[in-house]
Length: 202
Image 1: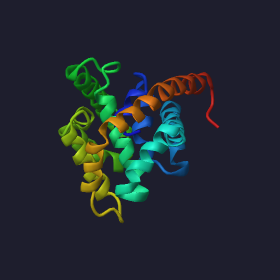
Image 2: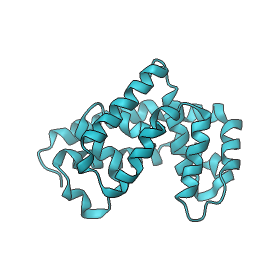
Image 3: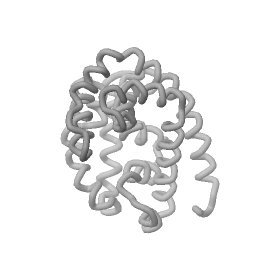
Image 4: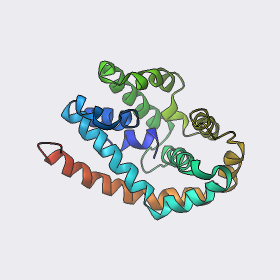
């Protein structure tokens, strides 16, 4: 899952949110430089990624997207799933509800800006200015996010065919999202309960 899902699956816990959002920017033992709360968020992020990657729905969606982008299919599926979450009326009643959540997320990140890793600090202004979390709702936002993956990938030259495939197989990918989401949400709640009940992080 991408930024929106990780933010949502932090369940309104500020330090969990920070760790969940910055985890991809933290390498190895760097995580132990952060507070216990943020470490818990990093750990939860990695649980979400592992669970998502091994779910049958993700494998089906990745197999489809690999026709267009080969080994980068997983990254694009993560973005696509954020689109379906942004449009999931069971999680966000309408556009205003989604935008309120996005702004609340940005506020927490800005309030804890000094605790963010430098490489994430470079990303955050663009995330806020272009309202990434909200704009996952729109196909144009997904097309732009696909291109963002391309810019960060040394061997991914073009995502136009991937976006065309996303549009063509929209309903199939939506079904994959729904197949995954309820399982992932429940599993993440259970994992978070375990993490929060522990007094130390191993």
